[in-house]
Image 1 (cartoon, rainbow, N blue to C red):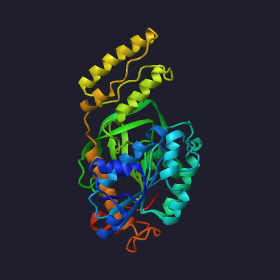
Image 2 (cartoon, rainbow, N blue to C red):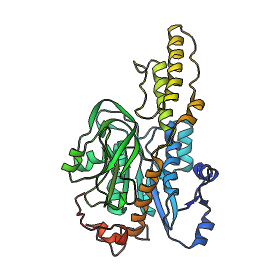
Image 3 (cartoon, helix red, strand yellow):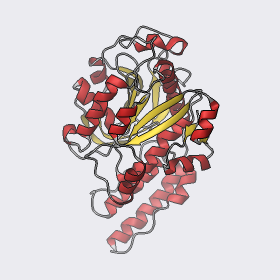
Image 4 (cartoon, rainbow, N blue to C red):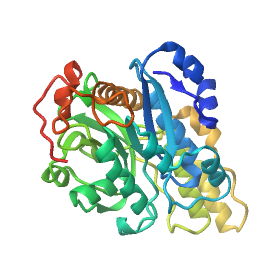
Length: 368
């Protein structure tokens, strides 16, 4: 599925250099295939703003569906922005009012860094709630990532997230619980995925609210779930969009916080992420850091460039497959007119019945 560079968003040029198919609007029109307009509500903090754009756009660009995809990044009022990130948003992001007026075929809501113990006090809460309320009436399917999942299930299923004893981060093995659901069609029944969160919602909580859990880790908990109708709300508690080095950069940020005195202890390694040779190199660096701090000397640079080539990626192929299945369902269900919700053959109360051969099943009932 080619991306269409319909704006000056720098991510289009970056992805084109990486080898992804990115078309001009003129080239896209010449293909005479359907357009798919996907909103990206980016709630990530400034440091991760552009990386998050690229991560989700890579997953979308890897789809095999016959359509040209237009990504519409936007944000909401209340999310603080400064410096280059603020300029980026002002230059390349659309207003929600513009997105709402034009319509979307699908929506992605990113995670965010938690700031408040109470979700309703988060700076994005009111704006995100307005977007979700609109999407439930006008957008066939919305993907929620990590903290956005916690916020939406709190808002619409009255599920209170649970604070973990310690941050859960790393790469974990997951098992598909319902191989017949079209979102996990033709994926491995067991696969890896990254997690990074300090709160969680459990399978028991979700299922008690009518949410269907599709993939879960014995160690890390729920990764993928869907609203009772099977498609309107898609919940990721993990991070299929992460790059190979995303957890490396996160570890570096935690280490920098320790050096600045913002966290009391040296950060532990993310689970199942660093191979042995990387752990040895990081152990050497830890000794250098602690010696420098004890001697009140400058700390040596973090060996990021040396560690990157040592890392493995065991999750991106499954992430691509999941998003390919999601976009296939959107293509099957969504009205071609962005202002309409579903195609005429789709039952809004049981939309997977309208997915034809893509769904392979029809026993889901609406309970979102």
